[in-house]
Image (cartoon, rainbow, N blue to C red; front, side, top):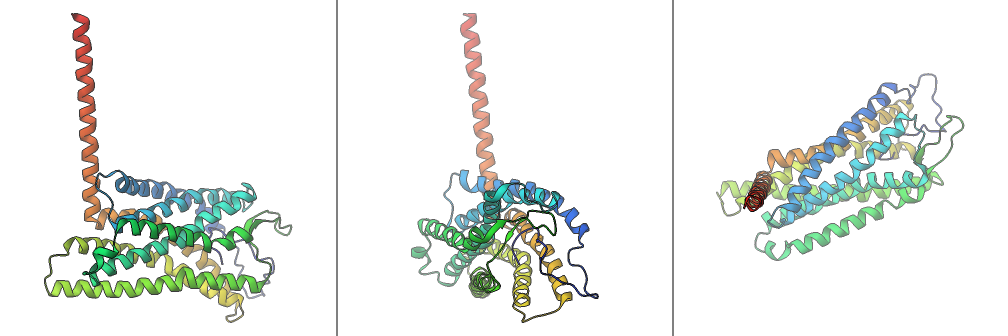
Amino acid sequence: MTLQPTSVPDQNNTNGMDCPDPYDWEWLHNSQPVYILIITVLGIMFNAFVLMVFCFHKKACTVAEIYLGNLAAADVLLLSCLPFWAVNISNGFNWPFGPFMCKVVNLGIKMNAYSSIYFLVLVSMDRYVALVHTISHGRMRRPKYAKLGCLLMWGFGLLLCVPTLVFRKMKYLPEFGITPCFLEYPNLTTELFFDGMLIIFSFIVPISIITFCTLKIIQALKIQVIERLNAEKTEQKATKLVLAVLLAFLICWVPFHVVTILDVLLRADILRGCHLEYVLEICNQIFTYLAFFNSVLNPILYVIVGKNFRKKACELFKEWKIKKIATSESSRVSNLSSTLKTLV
């Protein structure tokens, strides 16, 4: 199973008399391009707004904001690639953009999946250090370390995309009369190996870290409430936003990863059954698009939950409004001065 809006029909699939046809999904394919275009437009606008606030505000970004800003950048990367898949689906799964774009577009989609979860790992660890290890967090939580951490996560995400760069290709399928862009491993052993490694490093490891940090963060927040500690109110506000973003990510992405794991077990013959295969193929389509919706949901959470973000956004727009008024006034005075000189 691959992280992409469409699946190429399995050339070796042989359904029995009682097995449903897993590719009779005209209703789903017809709705996919419209859905993709909607989330692309909304997601790029919302995430561009987030990046604008973080980048142009006069105050430097905090460590948590650096991580969330990189998360927004990863979402923009994903959303910029999705229209190509909308065209691909509308074109009957014939990939019209050539082999280079076949690799590049899927690289962008995969980079979002792998980098996003590790940015959330960094966010979780930052909140964990800030609330659980409050004495030492001043030395450990510095913006330059946060930027270095983000750079390393982008590099690690690119490393996880190596199978996409190597095995993603275009190939004419005469039995279907199309030339799709899909992953083609040399053999099943290689396919299961890479899929297993990706499941471990793109899901099990980061989710374990996030779960541990989140439980410790919630425990620390409860202790602060009980003991009425007010010194860390700023940290608590930032933590509530982070927890909301983490929850949204888990809701949107965990179903996809669970289906991916079940699909690997099916291809390894640990699980069997054509009805299970049919269900997993349907779930793969639905949960893939649920995962993509997370890129639209994150900026909405920043506005709804993030009090500090709303404050920064209001300050930025006020600053721009004042500059606009000052520029307009300066222009008016300049024009008046020029008029007076003409009269004299």
